Amino acid sequence: MEDKTRLTSPRHDDITYQSIARAFNLPLVLHEQAFERMRRLSKPQQAGPNFNWDTPSDALTARLRMVQLPTDKTIPLEDQALFIDEELWVPVTVVNGNVYILPGVPSLFKRLLEGLKPILLPRLVDPEGKGMHRILISTPLVESSVAAYLTDLAARVEPKGVKVGSYPRWGKRRNTVTLVGADREYLESLVPEVEKNVEGRRVQREDEDDPEDVEEETTGGASTRSLIGLLREGEREKMVQAFSYFICKRERETKKAAWQDIKTRSKTQNEQQRKRKAKKRKEKRARWYEDERDRAACAFSYITVVEQVR
Image (cartoon, rainbow, N blue to C red; front, side):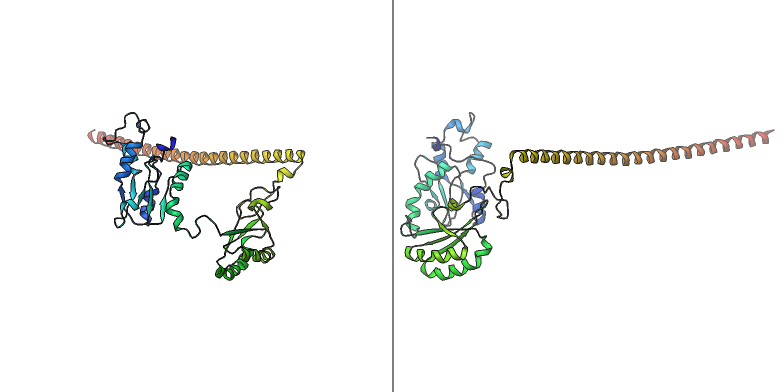
């Protein structure tokens, strides 16, 4: 079985255990049973040709990270790491009694979740979903428009055990209001009132009332139509040409701005270089005048001495 060994990966960026441990202020402790199961159930070739469980290496360190679990010393170890399947070494780590950490591989996640049913179902109010009913009402109004009414409705129906939900559907023109409760007859009695106040209608599926010509919405919740799809072929071609021209124009402007920047920098550099050269010439001329003055002074002194000797 493929999932038997390909459970989780020793990725460097997998910080699930570290994050949960930090959130609950717990230490990470090597779980000996999980480590022994890993050694027994992992295929040798998956660890690499030169891998050895008893020899320290980067690969061994990476694998040990996978069995260093958040551990609460006040809770028995067997309650903090559940081994659901005898063919799998990876445990379902339990933190605080109500946080279950499962691997992200979909097939493995599903397999372990199925194994958790005997543990989780007894803790649910309605384990099999029997007796609970859910009604969907599709509305074209945004959440802010119906928030006040739904808040009032939720307060009124809460004593009857009814939960009112509002769910925006990103990319769609219609949102969904839900009524969930055990009293089917009471839920049905609420439908006309809710339909009227949210300007909607009851549906069986969330997408049942979606117009066919609506595409994914942009951020902010406003639905958008596909403009190009509504244009005739000739207009579409013109739009493509206009868009291409706009892109090319932007590229030309960008290149022009970059070239102008280069020229400006070059001009500045040339000006600085010219000033440096002028300064050097001035300094050289000053040194030449100073040397000439010294030579003239020496010559004058020599002539004076010669005349005195005569």
